[in-house]
Amino acid sequence: LSAGKISADFVKAMSITEGAECVAIAARNGEKAAEFAKEYGIPKSYDSYSKLLEDPDVDVVYVGSIADQHAQMTKMCLEAGKPTVCEKPLTLTAVDTAELVQIARDNDIFLCEGLWTRFFPAMKKVSEIIASGEIGTIVNVQGDFGWCNNDCPYPEDRIWNPLSGGMTYDIAVYMAHLGQVAYPNAAVERIQAMGTKKNGIDQTVLCNMMFSNGNQKVDDQTGQKGMLQFYVTGAANTEERVTIQGSSGRIVLDAPAHVPSSIRVFKDAGRGKSIETVLDFSLPDDAWGAPWNYPGSIGFSYEIEEVCKALRRGEKQCSQFTWDHSIQVATMIDEIIRQTRGDILAEDASGEEKFSS
Image (cartoon, rainbow, N blue to C red; front, side, top):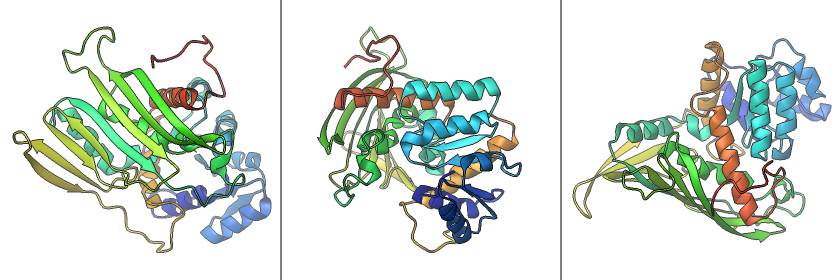
């Protein structure tokens, strides 16, 4: 659903993924849908979303619209009985994300938020290293992600959309999810965020988070607490490298870390000394040859492959990024937005802060 830039990259990645085929495209503008179908060799095009959802040949739907339409369109797909993959963010609030998860659960339908980074082989290896204890207990994660939005026309460009624009909604998820990778099954104990604004939305945001696997009320004597520090910005094109520091070593995800193709593992060999191992996870061969709209988009094939496997096994979610993962990340983003912009689209029903700050 949707014939925009991200959908174009997704379709191109699908064409090189074994066992997957794009059979239909729908857009509100029928002519645009037809042009998209012709350009990418898609058999059918529709001038309404509902028509595609009625197509029996469609096994799973990808929602690639702008972010403030994700919740409504995903709900439409689930209520039509279609397994659904929605581009990140799944919704703009934790409340809406939980609602979609409940609909999927109640109707026994597949649902996946497309946080594609979690599906990359390099990220799988990172999780394996952390679980093995090879670099000890994780102490801290540091990262950055920024792309310069100076050339994005105001107010036309999506990044300035007062509902779904801003750098937090756009890319903070790529940093926030790293807490789940570093500290599996941990709770978020504390979030501190500050930021600058441009054209009324968040432009540069700095965030510190504390995760806890233990008693949140006591001092950390057992390595059950860990930190995540990151910033996102639209003011600069940053290096975009991530370091996961353990008590006896560290992992470095080389740039660009949101589409990781190389990681370096450092094991302590005394103070100021370490032994380095480089692990390469080259991206798939690019059959298209033409430029992609977004860097590394050929990596969508990893996500598509895992979604297909899950569907064939009859599973309703992907283990790489589960429903619980989606809800937790959405809760983190809610709190960052609250602290930096002072506005979230759906307040917590209790009216209480979710985290200490």
